[in-house]
Length: 256
Image 1: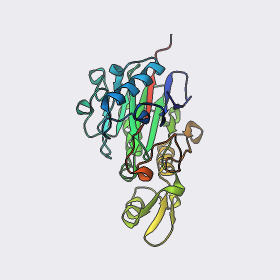
Image 2: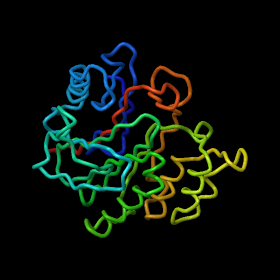
Image 3: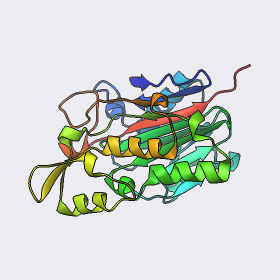
């Protein structure tokens, strides 16, 4: 199983699966993008085997570029694991206090954010494309964890995974205006190409939301891979127009 490992803490297993031209469906992990669904399930099982878990202990969402957050309980085990219909509906951020439960988000060019609080024993997985970023899903997830789950942001460690890079993410006036309307100063994450076009640093915007929430910079790991650049290891919808999806995942393991 080709993947990026995030070695954030000995109590978690986390990272991002990679495209693999020799694997079934090129190691696509998402059920909603077509292809042979049985092969996608096999890819998920291979990942679970590598992590010492099983699909029944996974929970996934029907991602809609929303700012909706769901607290995963043991009643949710297996949702979205074997079929898209059972996934947590209309949601782009999952978190849980439960151990041995794998949370994940599917993405190509969008930004995946993983969180772990070793004091509260909370893990989270966030999907933030530009629409989720404009809706400030990362900020809202952190605010929810702080206000509702008593998380101290200074204890949180975070991972921002592979996504489209600043240099590759060109957007039009409508997106520029929405980014400029966010609740904090976003001007430093925009480089204008003309009055109507600009490059946007989506990873940087999500990093800033973590920093503004109180997560220390030294606690944030950023994978700088550009999904859009030609390569065999990363899916890109913007580059290929039809592609599979990576899975950025996190699970907190019981350690005796």
